[in-house]
Length: 560
Image (cartoon, rainbow, N blue to C red; front, side, top):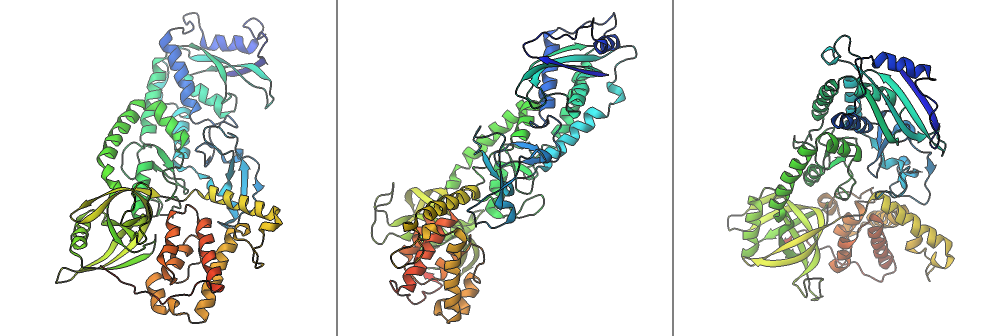
């Protein structure tokens, strides 16, 4: 049996055993003459622990157990039905999906790293958390006979707390009395929405034995623990990262998976988080559940992971092939005949991942940050070998594909070839990309003198990302229809057909367009699709104005 009361926070509650019939009935049910209120410090800790455990799966908006939990980009979670009002986002053309045109203001504002505004397309279901809520419900709603109190023993509690009154700013003192177990009774209050998520000054008055609560808590922990193994490493999830498809893994495991594939290990859906995986916020609810219920296991797991990371620090050290420009997602064709690079490639082929870095010659001897006037340019691309053909005389023919860009921080020489300590270069998040587009187009649109240049053409900064993409796409299609030599079928066979995605277009365009590599090199240090599309649009305008003259197509094979 349960009763709820509320009174102003600065007033004395009128609900006493003498004038509260419900309270008197509650005391009669759970506090016979042989029972007395539990005041032992250990039991107070158990009651406090019970509150902390139940709060782990409680929605911060409706105060009920999370229903169809929705993961937000800031790492917080709420019920899908508790999502704030949706509004249309303006000034955004890339990505062009419908769910990215809708947004909302986050309940958490700008706290704990939250930007305060989110895109609906960045939110998604949380499969693991939904399962954990079900585990709590099954454990706390279905009472096991072995966990029932012996016949004649009464159990129950009264809890008082300070909370809001019906979404009003005024805080009041509330109380509730429940007959039965502490964990089950408190969960029942939460399930009915009778116990505030933001409850403060929580005090318990518990009657009956507490050993059954400890047994139930241990059983709950055991059941929850069975759900918390990563499906990649099969260990306790460390730094839980929830993907766009709703599955949760260790952050390190997601990084490892994305080095080899862009598919979710659980459902095989495409993961569009390669460039942001290290900056994505962790799943805070799952992290809190593990930290509260299994602090020692989390600490042990983190220590082991730190040791593994220390042992794998040499992953940032990579052999450098100083030759020409290579680009992410694009193939590179190599004919290797120099002795130093023969040796280097033999070692690459013996390594597990078969990767090396490609950097351009620094032909103009330009100073490179931290490297001085090095023989190579500072930015390059990590390649993975797809095909390796060793010729009888020791030469080799190699086809490799670009994976990601990097910046060389330092280098040294091993057996006549360079080895570099590198730092990966990633794009900003899609949300930042959209904000950049909205800001640039709105500023340019409000300043008419920025809208066009001296020749009457629209200023690139004032163009939407989709318009910038269309500039390059229209140019390529026009050249293709006119039979341009650099778009010969053999070239398209090697580098692929004309891309229809803005993310892929700059890399493809730079691979096939016969202009100086020094011009293409500018793409490697960019951190957004929009930046790269502005660069390719400038190329188009220079070519159309005859400022540049297209050179003949270089050979597909770089010979060294």
